[in-house]
Amino acid sequence: MAPTHPVDVLLILTDGDHVLLALRDGTGYADGQWNLPSGKLEIGEDAISALVREAAEEIGVHLDQDEARMVATVHHRNSAGAARVGLVFAAPHDPARHGEPVNNEPHKCAKIEWFPADMLPSHTYPYTAACVAAWRAGTPLRLSGWR
Image 1: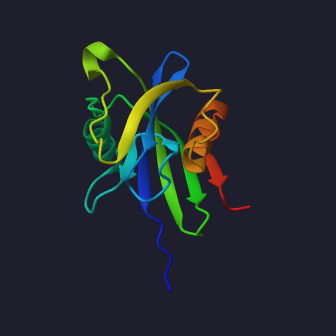
Image 2: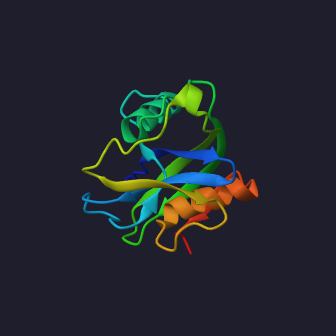
Image 3: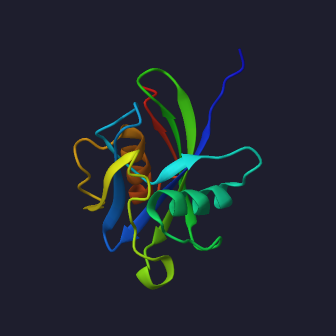
């Protein structure tokens, strides 16, 4: 069987030394864990367009196509053995340009909150923790859940 690795885009939105996380709720997967605003590429969609779309859909933030920079790629395997590839982008939050983040998906997210990048909550989803760690370390490729 040919491997399938969905491609995700993940946003590290920063405010000084803090990053914005969302608390998963009502999805049936990783509920009760904090994760980055993120989502899968749709068929025919490029990574930048997906990032801009997901930021607007999930947290109501309006990014320009050219302002987020790619900071890492994370190849993640979850506890069930399913793998995915994450393209991790970072952008400093500018309320005047982007608007204030809001929880636009209360059916999937209990709340959003800023956390110090070096002190993520203990119940942060491992994929998200790997993305933030790769960004902080300047590591272009990080494996998560493979060992």
